[in-house]
Image 1 (spheres, rainbow, N blue to C red):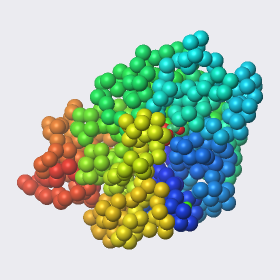
Image 2 (image 1 turned 90 degrees about the vertical axis):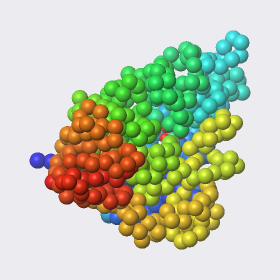
Image 3 (image 1 turned 135 degrees about the horizontal axis):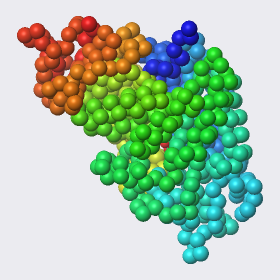
Image 4 (image 1 turned 180 degrees about the vertical axis):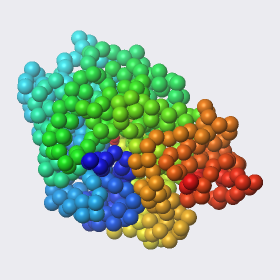
Length: 535
Ligand code: GLC
Ligand code: CA
């Protein structure tokens, strides 16, 4: 019998290459920098790395504005560096996931440059969404870009092109078969170079319908679609049900084709994970039907409050919805688009939540720096580079805080990240959060992650479903405790601000913070902390 494919319950480490490690002193992380730190990554106990884009790009949106998807941007190195990275990762039994960006290209891509030159009505323009202005000269509809400002930009001959993101990211027209042909070429290019899978950027966005229809609240909708804009969840959910440009049925036809392409590589078990934040949540399961993609991100934990009812609902819903299509969920607490979890819910809470989700079935994603417990970087407005900041005139601060480079060693900023000036400043206050300093401290967040990932592998991967012990529907301490058992492990999270007794059986094998005491045959879980017990 074939064993479970590598990605099934993998732990995947997301690297934002520009912020990971700078090998040549220009202040920006690069591919050789990633390669040089693969032992660190391996020792964390993860199974795979996902690399945010490193392709040729003017870097208006951190490389998600791709000018040539089949080459490496010089700031990150070259194709040989990519090959070497993949080879070195494989040597350590780490898989490599590349980030593919099919919703849009950069305006510097040769197709878009050709479209500008060729003019209205041309074949070149049909690869994008070009429309004439309304009679009064306004854009074809009122949509607001996800980075703020209109979703349309006018070119010299008066036509407008659609861009759901920055004006430098024209959306591709997936009704044009040339577009899919080009992306299949890109997928094969990277698979042939050795990558093991793909993270599909804006996977729910490729197919547009009703491109000429207005939305009743375009600004509200744009805010609701941003993970870094706080919003009442009811208001957000109501708006998210009205998105006209995401999650159209046609996207699934594309992924069915791609699945065939992946499967044609047989034993290599090429996988893909969809970035598809869709509503209602049941729609996400469509992306992971047996003949489509392998995983879909669950975004709920990126915005969920540290609250037992909220977290129970998120976990329960994700497990049960995925089960309807025979898939396992994914868990992510941070990524390059959202505030870092330690800043969002608190440092102890972030550790507790990480240990809680590492026990769950499915794949766990860890955003580089999360294992160190990094908070968001404190930046001056003059440091900021996110197009959102620029397009909203500073009203929305954007995502740079989560993208500050990693602190590696030493006592002074930039803590070994670079011998030059880092592209975003690293605060001197991160002195005790460097890899070096956390390695020396057995109580550090880094050690917690390393120990937890080792125990996860030993006792939990492949251990089947969970049984709730305490939650809003089970047990009697549901406001303070959330607890489940899985295989031989019982996981108890105490969300409250005081220590709580529980009846978990077995031997304590890890705790996210503080110490677990025993009292009258019961275990006392410290405030804002999670513990695992082995039966
Ligand atoms: C995805 C990426 C984000 C990027 C956007 C546009 O949401 O995660 O970083 O800005 O797509 O490509
Ligand atoms: Ca560099």
